[in-house]
Length: 448
Image (cartoon, rainbow, N blue to C red; front, side):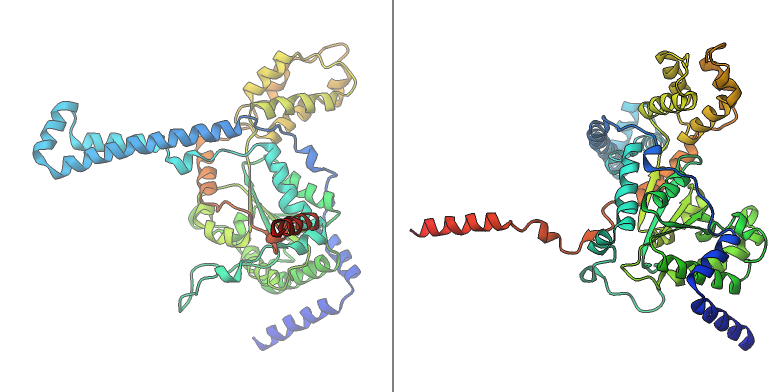
């Protein structure tokens, strides 16, 4: 143990003594500094949900009606239990026994959510772009905005911790964001866009990525050295983005069939050193950790721990009809270029209806697989038809109801509100010097 501890300390000291440029070059050769595509936030194509407020108001009204009906039925069940004579009258009037009525009531409640659940609707893709800009790009790209935003918990609102070990995970320092949603919903693309928009250096710490496949970083000591190298370069050459795809593998405990011993060799020390490295960050360090995942049963069980690490959770939905129309028209015309496409507006409408519940990445892959270079060259001889996209479209799966329900359940448990506030929000409410002068003049006139 003493020898192992001495080696770890020596290696950590070597990392601290090494030049940042040499560390960066080493990280590049071991594939932790990948080349990312030149994508921007505007490449995440999607329309605004112009009916969002109307849908929210309608769902709140419907939720109120559901609660009113639910209360009346519950009162009926209570009377059924309290008064035997009243129970006989109820059974004769509705021709149903109590057990059958209670089962029917429970089934009805499952299909009719309460007001809190009904008032929530999926964000539009334009809102996702806005949220990524506000919570990731602006604080990371501007040191001034980063200094003005206080993402730590207000000391006055802290509660006294109970004695003994607490099961609640501790909060971490630094900026963190979780992008969750179905596969091919644009999470990785916007992670790259955050780095491109801010001019950040991009690190890839995906536990299933190619950098961990060679077996060099599958032990606690090498991973500790690796995290020390990454965070030293990230702080020295800020802004920096540390990207972790399939972050659910880091925080979720897998048992039985889902257990992967080879992956556990990487995940367990990676999680430990990641939490320790985040504590070394200062409030002014422009280092953003982005985690991507899709929601599963394991993620729902580990949601409390995941939310304690990621201060911002952004849901990437599948596009609605307006966004699908915009995706099809934009991607097809971009691929074809100045040539005549041959598709009519009705063709785009049909394709948009056919790709309901499909993610934006599925539509992009279908367009790129169908419109090959050879097919584009032959557009003048053979115009494009909508049914040509079917051969590629049948290879992909839509977002099924079970997966959507798990993402909805995760979203309902996410605390809504702004994770960062201005340190002095009262400064915005203070009157300007002109208003102060007018107030003083008004007071003097009143005295006269």
